[in-house]
Image (cartoon, rainbow, N blue to C red):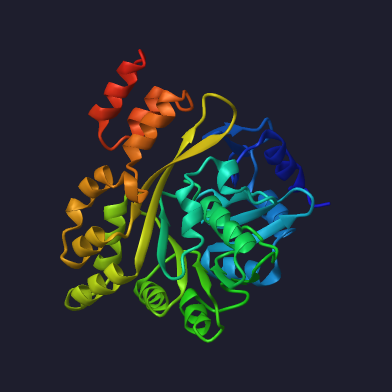
Length: 357
């Protein structure tokens, strides 16, 4: 048995999200969003390197030694899968393992808005799930794809780096491709995808101009495309996509995005105070005609006002969702205020509850 498995078991037992192993430091677990040291000696470079290489595929060792960075997935049968990153720092080798549950939780189990199930049943278009690293984007997307898998009779193709949640075919045929193992790049896989008869395409991350362009093309040609971006609000997501392109092509990109966009779900993760665990709060923008016109006419600065008035269309602002979680005593006032976009509004909600941040 690999020596590192004891740390994986500890992470799983305590319900943590991440394991941090760094040369010159004690191991740490991220529990409910905060790092906690394990009562264990500080790890030295050679010792940690040997521990990590015991579970690392040979091609990934070669890649790491050539570049100083590597990503891959690792599975401990009966416990969990892990998204893995190794990197070099001034004290030596370090690694971060993100636990990926073996059971895919449903939209209902995660407490996500019912609207997200509707997104899984769209015929075509682009749906983006955004947020900072560690905000639960992959978990949300897995729940949406799981709903499609159970309720549609289609071909779902995922392109990931690495594969995180493993979906078993139910109503749908599911093919999951890992960048670096099954395909050279997101771009290469997306080019091939259009010849593979998919109905739904999941692109793990829209990292560069060519990947974004191909994802938009796939959405425009009758496919339902899901992907992620590291942006923190719906209107910033739109701007980010457009600004990736050269200025002389941005008008065309606006037209393409206006035509294909179906929804942007921007989420933030909070520590729960009602029970152990964390909960996501979402801002949801739906691609209704007025939203499409604003994108086409470069008026994305007006999108926040549409979010505030679009509840009947299934939209919600992040601040409204934060206030709901406050009112139901799920999150702490100080956390709510720290993540709020309109701090005055959230402060008023806190005071109404008789609390103080």
